[in-house]
Structure formats: C-alpha cells, structure tokens
Image (cartoon, helix red, strand yellow):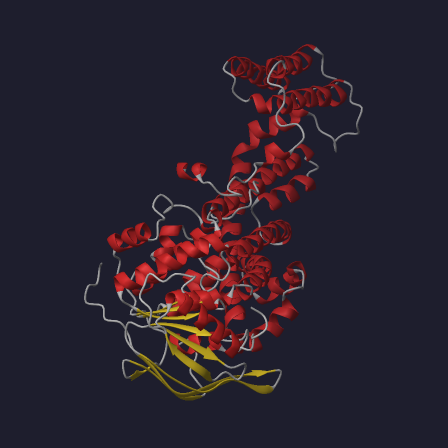
Length: 255
Length: 331
C-alpha cells in the first residue's frame, strides 16, 4: 500500500548452531540447522516446547548472532536487527505509555520517516479504527494483538517473524486472526516464519511445515503443504498430515 | 477521550476515590446553607466578646471572618463548594473556639500560644518579609532539587543499564546515599566556601538518593521484550534509553521524585536555620530568637503552603505524564 516495490525476503541458514551459558555451563540450543526459505513462503516451525524455535527466530531477527554457521537474508549475512525483518511476539508487548496509534507508529518514530497515511491505513486494515487514542490496557487480548500486528506491518516488512502470535488468544479470536493473517500474507506477499504449537494452525496457514527435535534442536522433517487456500480443517489430506506430524513429534498416542 | 466510554471491554473505568469512600458525598441539603452562618458566628464572637488583653487586629479578623460568611452564602445559593461545606463549617467553628479559648479567656500560656489575630497581624504587617523569605526558599530549593533530580535520574539510568558504571558507582552510592545529608552540613560549610553553594550541594545530594534508587529499580524492571520490540525495528541506544527505558520506568521515577522532594524540604530548613541568612527557615530561627511566636507560626503556615503547593505541582506533572496508568491516585 505505501511501498509497492516491496519484495519478500529469502532466508538461508547454513549449519547454524547456538547455545547459552546457563549456570556456568554451556547448553546447546540449536545444532546444525540448515534451512532455505524462498521469498514469499509461509513457514511454520513446530517442535517440542523449549526446543529452541524461539532462539532461531531471535537469530533471524538479528537480536543475537549465532555461535556457528551463517544466516543470510537475500544472500547477505545478517549482522543485526533491521526494519525489513519485524518480529511479533506471543505477548503484544505494546508500550503502555503510548496510545494505540503511537504504538503502531513506533517504527516510524525510530526511523524518523513519518507516514501518517500508512499508520491510519494499517490501523484500519486490522480493524482498530476508532481505537487510535485508546491506551493498551483498555484493549482486549485480541485487539492488543491486532495492534501489535499493525505495528509490525506498518512499514511493509519483507519478512514477518511470528513467535506464537496467537498462542494466548481464546479459540474463537484465534480462528478470526488466522484468517486475517492469511489474507494479509496473500495481499502483501511478505515472507513469514511462524513458530506455533498448534499443528492444525500450521497446516491451515503454511506453505511448508518444518518440525524440530527436542533440544538441541535440529530439523526432523520438512513438509510441503501443497493444498490450495482456503483450506478446511476436516480435509482428509490435512488430517492425515496432522497425524503424521503428531507422530513425528512423539505424540502418537495423544491425539 | 469520549470514545473510551463506548468500549465493550473490562476494566476501563478506574473508580474515583470518592466512589470508594463509604459516604459518597455529604448530603447536599442543609450543610452548604450553614457554612456562611458558621463564619458569621466566628465573626460575632471575635467582634462582640471583649479581648482578654490588648491584641492587635481583632477588628480586621472579625471582618475577614464576616467576608468568608458573605462569600459562602451566595455560594450555597449557586450550589458551588457544596462538597467543601462541612470543612468550611469545621474551620469556622475551630477559629471561633480558638478565638474564645485564647483571645477572650487566655486559657493557654503566652507567648507560645498566640491568638488568631496575632497571626493575622503578622501577615498584615510583615507580609513583605515573609514573601521575600518565601522567594529565597523557593530559589534555594529549586536549584538544589532540580539539580539533584536530574543527576539522580542520570545516575539511576547508568546503574540500570551499564554493568561497568554499576561496578564503580554502586559502592559509592551505597556508602554515601544512606547517610543523612544533614550530617554532612558542618563539613560542607567548611569545604565549600559559600554557605549558599554548600546548601545547594547538600540539597541536591538529599534529593538525588531516592531518585537514584527508584530510577535504577524502575529501569531494571523494564520488560526486556520492550527493548527487543524497538531493537528489531532498528532502534539505537539513545531511543532505547529516552523512549523506552525512561517512559517504562516513569511510575517509579515519580515515586523517587516525590521522596526526593520531601528530603529536600528537610534539608532546606536545616540549611536555612544553620547557614543561609535568608529564607523561611532563617525567618523562623530569627522569630524564635526574638520570642516572636506569632511570626514563627506565620512562617510555618507559609512553609506548609509552599511544600504542599510544590507537591501538588509535582503530582500535576505526574498525572499529565502518567495519564496512561490505570491507577487513580490523586494528591
């Protein structure tokens, strides 16, 4: 809408390993992760809780540098955070001292390039018109997450990094937000990397689902979801995939 | 913010304090009509009951009381000040009682206990010197408090954000901070050549300590995700400090500023009583030296109004900056 020339970002991970010092001992979190994400793909990352998926997102965002290996964005190494790769967290993390509008305009405040029309259009796009002057504590969980989505999208990022963005929403709000996320991705064409714990959500939204082992995480499977949108939850093909993935994640008996 | 009222969501309305208190407001019936007459009673007592001694300004005091009554009668008619009416009645009766006990019956030992007309007389005859003292106190306070607060916020931010700064500065703060600044007064008057500069330095020190600790605590408590959000958008340190850390810590910083203001009041009075030859503290000291107790009371009244006024200003600033907060604390 503002920047029609936006091209989605391609991401390449070459033998990426990472870890943390926990209590003086080095704990590996990612081990030899290789991934090639084409521009415009919608990638869902699935894996056991605490396996290191969020760490992977932090590395791609540039918030941390990997201990070993390389991460390339369109062929160039990532050296730090950048406004073309925006992260959306599980919590909306809106700044409570900023109105909804000022929160959405955050990236413009940082870059100094003010575009009021883009802010208004993005707020309208996520359905928050009329709430521009509200404080974050006055919003419901779903509205706050919409505001966070608008904040992420206002400057037309080339890559949207989603860390369980719908994880804390109630199930009905979640369904609405899934549909909207899909619509935005189809309209705008950015690349998406999303961590989720919901296999069904991954299968409904993603073009590719990647599963990870438990920590230290490495890629277990990489499944192309070759189904047209809009997908249906009771599609037998999708149900079969869901079963396969749950088995891979070690939940063969739980579903 | 008219639109907030239409929100279909929870916890929008912060409950005003008045709504929580058991008696929501005083009955708007009879009391406002009694406020004016209560002051006429005080005026009547003052004017017609002969003084026990030759006090100054008795007539003026009766006139002041009467004027209060004349103001409050039409106020009741126009339904203004209804909420303050009980206080107005209590004040009028309090003054009338004071007047009776001391000016008319002399039940309390003089000169320590003055009469209302003594106090009024001081304000009428010595207002120039009182005003001058007030200005001197305000000037002394402003320089020391503002310096101390800015320094306190800067040091607090440093402690909250830089490990190296913390390594060097924290031990100094731990050693010097808890020391009552008054204890340094004799030393400061020796080391620093002018008593004005010495007082300013100590006042800055006194107000800085709570500001440092609370700014530090506020900055340390900032959700790291707030920084991540700004950093992924390319924010640099300057933005992270001034537009993320400080606003996020602002509620705590204001508690520090409030406590620091109290500390600087204490330091102000001590400095003016012991070194600086002007200001309300000096005036009180001088009044006590001459056993001019009404003057001391007058200075106390002025000082109390000054302190509460300054705290009111601080809270107004807070309400403005922290309007986003849910809490409804009102000074």
